[in-house]
Image (cartoon, rainbow, N blue to C red):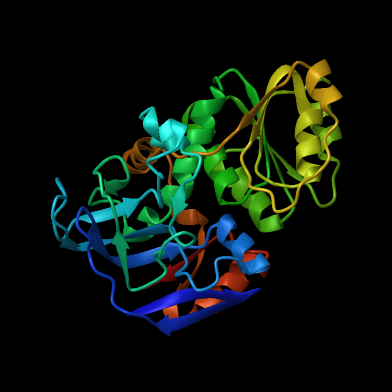
Length: 336
C-alpha cells in the first residue's frame, strides 16, 4: 500500500510499504481523508518521528475486523481519537485514560492514517473509535478530531452565554472554538488572527469583533471593547510567547486563560500578572468526540467551509507545504 512517511526536516515521502492488517482486538480501515494538524507541522518543521507513517485526523470505511472487537462491522464509516493510552500510568490505573501521561499517538508512536489503509489497535466503540452518521461526509468526518479538541476546550473552560470571550489564533482549533461558542449562545466573541483569510473565517464562524493581529494592537482593542475590564475567558490558540502574554493581559481579574495550542519553544513568564489578577490558568489537552459528532450531526456546527485545500496522497509533500505556507490555507486534507 502507499503511505506518506516522515523523512526529515520539511521532508515527506510517499512510498510503498507492507499492507496493514487488523490485529486481534483491532480493525483495518480504508482511509478516505486525512487532515494535516498543527502538531503534524511541528514534526514537519523539526524533522521528528522519521520513518513513521503520518496522520491522526482521518475518516474511513472498516474493511477488516479482528477477533474480539464488538459493535463494529465491515462497511461501517468511522473516525478515531488518534491515540491510545499506555495502560500503566497513574491515570490509566484510575480508569481515566484520557489523562494518560504517556499517550501513544498515530503518526508518532505507531503508523498513522495518511495511507491507503490504517490498522487501529485496541478498538473500543464509542471510546476510541466512533461511527459516523450517514449524513456526515467522509471529508467532514476527518475534521471531527480537531473539532473534538475545540469542544473539549470549551467544555473544560465552562464558559457561560453571558461571558465575553477572546480567541487568540484562528487556525482550525480556534475557529472550531468560535463556532462552538456561537452554537452555545455565547453573546460576545472576540477573535484575533494574523492572516486575512482566517480573519474572514473568524467573522463567518461567529466572532463579533475580529482583530487584525498583524497590524493592530489586540490588547488595546480588547481593552477598549470591554471598557477596560477585559474578557471573562481567553483561548490561546496561537502557541507562542506573544499570544500568551496577550492572553494574560486581556483577561479580567478572576478570569480564565485556556492554553490550547502546543508550543515548539519554551518561553519566559512573569507570574506576578497571574497572581495579582487571580487568574485561573488551564492546560487544554484532550478531546470530546461525542459532542463534536453531535454538533455536526445536528447542524449546529459545520466544518466543511474550513476545508480549503485537498490533495491526492501522491502529493502529500505539496499538501504540507500548502498547510505551512499558503496564507489562504485553514484545513488541508489528503485524499487517499
